[in-house]
Image (cartoon, rainbow, N blue to C red; front, side, top):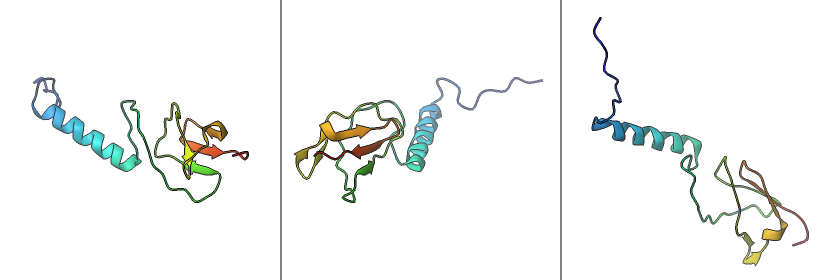
Length: 90
């Protein structure tokens, strides 16, 4: 039986192209940056309510948060899934 060569063998010129294409498609379907971990600055529009869903499913840290130019970081709870909750007291 002949040995089969892997489709994405290391060193083949098409390997990087297909990996990049697959990664781009996963990101497009998810609607957020999947990997690697990056630092981003986002400007989001909310509904005026207490909750804002960020385009991520792996939020590590919120370092700044403003609402209409006012610093509200002390009043924000963030979940790992990307949900920000603005507590009253702002």
